[in-house]
View 1: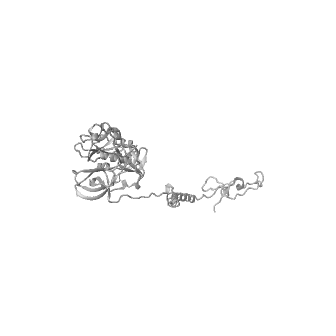
View 2: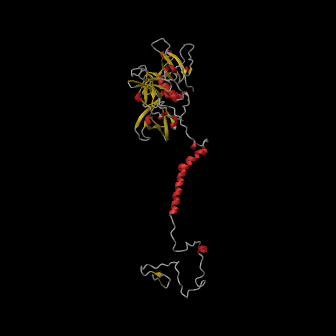
View 3: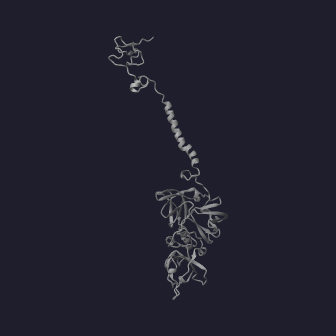
Length: 399
């Protein structure tokens, strides 16, 4: 049995370990006989709960440590419940409450795919559509970058396949100019529809200081998913992405078409193609025809026209030409800017349409040069040979 010694102050000493003296409130202390009675010199004892608001365990110097693991576990559980509520329960439950409403956050976007596995998409800035699977055959028209076409037949001849355009023109095109990935033209897979209204636009690998991926020509249609200040991120054939500047493009809803505008915008688009290199039935500044020019310029300004010259001669309204009652000369003012002018051959008396032009101002036509190398502006007078060659004038746009 260990002997506990107390000093005069009631503190016990552990002589064996010689630790510093510690007073334990719980330890019974025998007070000396001369200790003052309660209420004497030291006053009445205080009730710690009533006086200081301390509980029994808080009023003692020695108390057991609280268990902290329980509180920590409760905190972790609360965090887990909050995370599950935000990322799992709420997304799963709330759409059911708002189903059928117009609250945009909970509207489910419907995806209706337009193109099946018979479609292909052009992956070059433009591709020639030929009358036969032969590069020496007649060029019917061209198809533009990201334009969907229907694959009709793999000819196995000169790497040509037979296709049909969305406006019903059939012909032959090189197979390597097409891809079977149609995601870049599916409207419901994207946020914006863009139509190139400049003569061409660069598509870059990055929004800033990127490298050139391709050039896209006027009337090329692209779909975008991201819009930032001055740029769009567009979907490209083969699943690629690119960036294009916002100037010189028309932004629409993915299933919207361009609104028809006045003829001055059409004329402005036509003039932007002045001095383009001429090729038969071409659609781009790298190779343009007058009928191709009219097709793309009308489309970006809200009017759908056929691609061929003969079909364009049947569009719009016929303009009744006015002649001077004295001289019989053509009144140039009767042909207005934006009118399509169809002319017969200078080498034949036949009234069959031989070529066409676009009036850009009174007495000014944009037409193929005499050398058949470029499309350029040409002034003419009422007494010139060109006035006598006019067969028909069609008005597509009005002020």
